[in-house]
Image 1 (cartoon, rainbow, N blue to C red):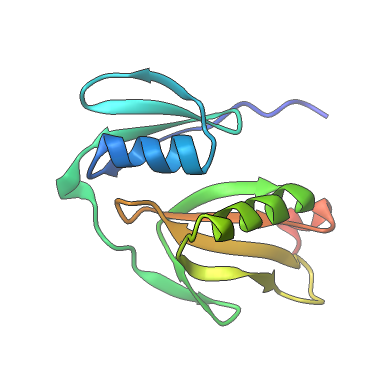
Image 2: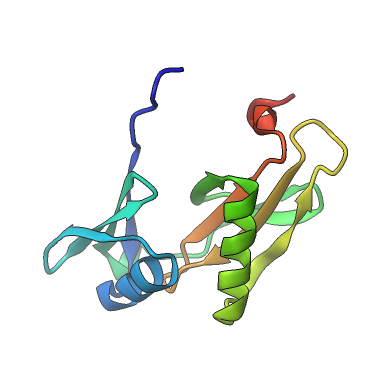
Length: 140
């Protein structure tokens, strides 16, 4: 199987200090390059860049997905099931407020997945999911 290239995502934040606390300390993403206006993070091998742009930070509209109000504008990772459970426990232990609590979505259907959603301090929505059967990622 061919290795997939890392993706790059730039997004707005209200505070680089808060972004460093959230992405660096809470999520464990090592910091890369930075300036007074932005900071790179290693998001499990992918490059995400928090840009200081308070005027661009706003709440995301949501759509219904299997009974949950899922923020339309969000990003995240597909983890292994053990890594997903470990992250959920770490976030719970840190007192994280979830916008969608960790749970199983599409139970018993193609694409069954564990999922959870949370907001960073600037209101950017993140989803972390996992599949017991990884082939379900694109199941129809």
